[in-house]
Length: 146
Picture 1 (cartoon, rainbow, N blue to C red):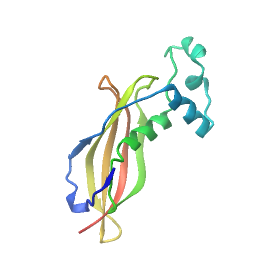
Picture 2 (cartoon, one colour):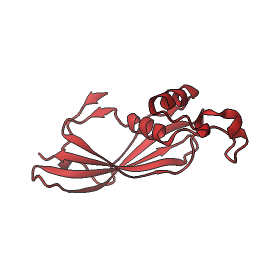
Picture 3 (tube, rainbow, N blue to C red):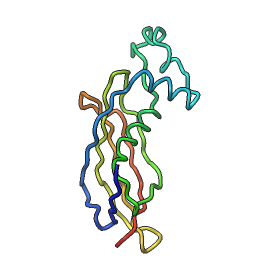
């Protein structure tokens, strides 16, 4: 992790970066359930899940979001501020043993209310080891101009 100043003018539409991967573990399931209180059987009850169409435990969508976004945090940009996330969708289930990585594409740029700032949208796709998109969202940034 390092600091890199990237100003509004430096962002180019369609620029893309790809993160390293991370394998999802049973410990991730247990820790996330403890943090959130979400102990639904879909995530925690291996035997019950065997009786369901999906056949195995499914990762918490919020956990995959958190881990996938965490993977994008290899650079700290002191010129940008996160405004939040839009259009998040859980596209496919993630299971224990799956490996995910994130692909980030600059999809929009625009003016902000403050004239010394601009807005940047990063389209984030979280992808499993089979190349399947499992989660998508748009990360909204407020970025200083030069």
